[in-house]
Length: 193
Image (cartoon, rainbow, N blue to C red):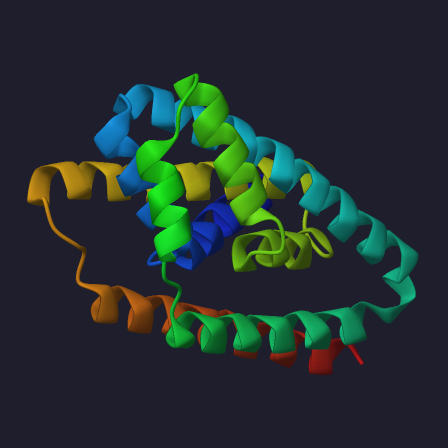
């Protein structure tokens, strides 16, 4: 479980760097207290990633006789996540506008926005992929920690620097990490076949 926790924390932290969720976190932090934004992000992430590990665990159990193929598929998925990261992710004007003019309770506004933004996002898909092979509880806790830590970094950096993070450096480093994980998973899959 500890390995799954550490691995998923690192992978999801890297996946979240430069993601639109970080931009949303910065936008919400300009309107609400950082504590409320972090609580909303944490609750939404915990719920989405619990569903993600459930899906990943089911896939891993249902196809346990095909572990080599699952590793190959996971490796290909991580290579795809690397390409997705290189493509970049931007907060649309509509999403930025909603974050800026959001009314109501901060926790509800932030939580709901993050919940909807994460459905089908690369961090959700990466969490599913990790849960096909690793301990589901470790992946759930680790992926939640990784995402909240990355978004907390965005809030702090945005508040301290008052400008955007060096996007290209973050984007290329995150993509490289996905490519490395992808190749390692593919090598493991070939070894298991």
